[in-house]
Amino acid sequence: MRKYKTDHGFLLCFIVNLILNFEWSIPAWILLVMHFVLHWPLWLFFVALGGWILYILIVTSVISWVASCGNDPKPHKENANPYSKKGNPYKEVE
Image (cartoon, rainbow, N blue to C red):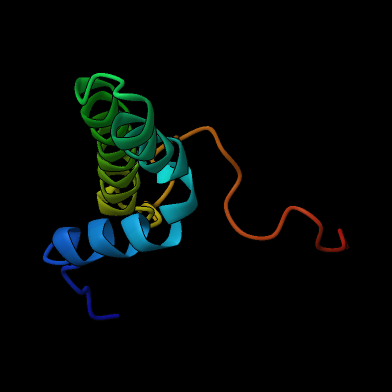
């Protein structure tokens, strides 16, 4: 079978993961609203948003690393043990 290289889509996978996990950034947006309403510090918003982006980056890199690991079966090797039986061990004895 032909092997395909799939290591060129990291940025696309990262963007898709950001979109799919957008609801995890809601606490950061709430902190941004609290900054304008209650004058909370703005760095809380950036910490929450950066933590979300860092988490998605780590998850995407782990998934791409796992996808790059091969699962090709080992090629069949002939038995080199001289004491092993050759042929079918279940054939009828005459």
